[in-house]
Image 1 (cartoon, rainbow, N blue to C red):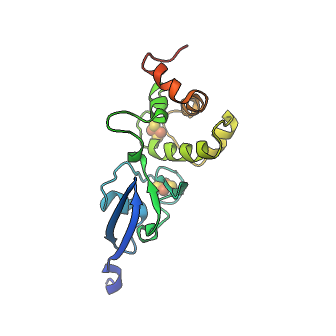
Image 2: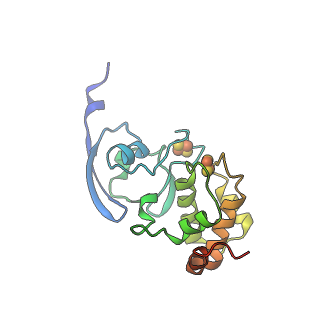
Image 3: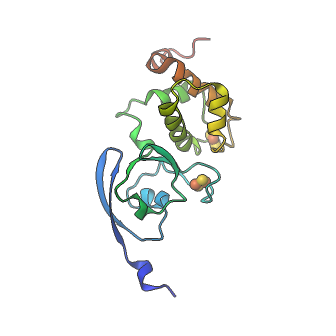
Length: 174
Ligand code: FES
Ligand code: FES
């Protein structure tokens, strides 16, 4: 039998993808499930719900966080960014564009988490080495790509930024 307080929703106010959002959430719901079920942000994926795979990684106050290991109520007062914040209309963010250009995704299930981890890395270290990228990405599991192209995409973005996007429209310059 459920305890009564498990069914009592708590009010949360958070800035989510640049907008103030007010919602109420059951205290036992993870942040990942909260973002999906309460706010319709289905770009947030859960692959393990144990903090291992990294698929649920989002930015909370600009730091990468496993949203499966945080409760929705803990979002109160926080600034949250999910993969939905990256593109502008139908224009991909340059980092997303680099992923497309380098074939850095196949099934795409890991991609949102890897983009969040990459954003945090690049904010702290705009010119990482391949080894540094690999080290930081070691907490994000991908079953499809073999990782090489993901590192390629991040390095391309780090080295060329917006210029890489313009090149991307014409395909990789190889
Ligand atoms: S679903 Fe959160 S780390 Fe795997
Ligand atoms: S693209 Fe399928 S898990 Fe990474």
